[in-house]
Length: 233
Image (cartoon, rainbow, N blue to C red):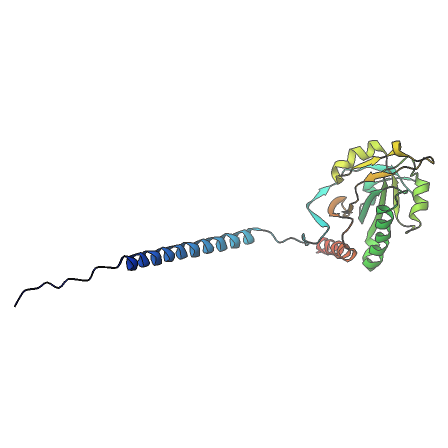
């Protein structure tokens, strides 16, 4: 009987390549899983380290100012017939807007919205003042402002701004304006370009929120009330 050694059949190259591919896929899967776990852990740590805001920062058109900015005091002639300082408004909340009485669009629309906000605030309106600061002091005297604001609400306060005072405080508000006197018509009427934000100021004279012109009225009211509630807590 012959002593024959049994030989193993040769390994298929395709089979070896298949096992290599499988191992590669498994390795990629393990790496991806580890990456997902690391990202999830990082997100968890970030959330834990982030303080919960007292007001919603993601409401369209409303930017809470945190920490609040202490505003520089200023004094201007007022529609009340006397000079009025920003500090005179301390003790109550204020909603302030810069504009001019000859404005054909942004200013009357904003002041009309102020009347709606005041009504919607209900009892909380007793803690609010609505202030209109003119950037066109040559035309907007205290008497003109009083007459103009009476069309919206006689309780609204008008302030006659001047270039020197406005220049001192523009950094606090991001205020920008330009009187187009060189483009005045034959009757002397001219337009004024100006920022259209409203500013929520608290009883300590601090800026608490920047409110865009196109913010929704109900969102503004809700934000004001949330600030009031947070301060009272």
